[in-house]
Length: 250
Image (tube, rainbow, N blue to C red; front, side, top):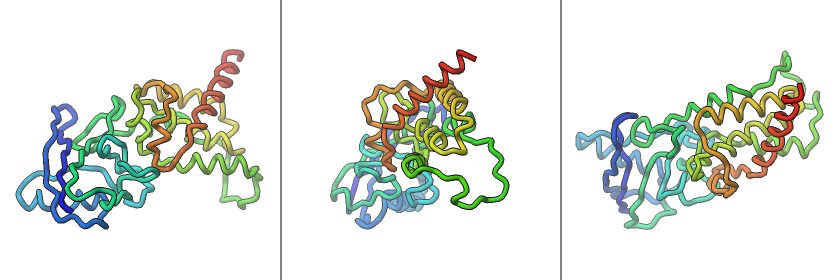
């Protein structure tokens, strides 16, 4: 496959970015998107140029590091697929591909396609924990969990914190991410003692980081590589409203 890449280049967080054009020649159709970038980078380095910087780690769709906007869509055109799991067979020979970093005020660009997503870490620190004493690892059936609640918690726990939901939202809202993290713990017996405090603190941290408000347009759900449902947002709104009311009465 022979492709044309139009890639966002930016040397530092404070420098002005630009689009640069790179040829991507003789790319195997079975290569992943990141492997394609590896091939292009090897050629750029061989010619004495600076490689395209991008984030990656596991390349197995688990870590959430591969935060690329491909042709205007976070993680690219395939649904429920991370950029590292996207393969070049989904593109056509001769295509022009636009590659940019995730865009959000809370995700400043560090260099090229690399963004700073530590805002997510600070949101988790605000309430993504339980304080119950766990001791040694308990047997799996020590604390019974109804299957419906366990399924909801597990579905929420699949969030990998990639930030695609933020990049897709016109307001750069992090509600899908926050609601997944809150629902994960609030649906489990071990997480319920901090349920109210968790909802209040994590939403407050989200607002302090500069993320926008949810407009219920569901772009977040559409681009989520783990298909986190927007139902979590409604659940978070309910938990937050109840927690705020109880906090006002105490």
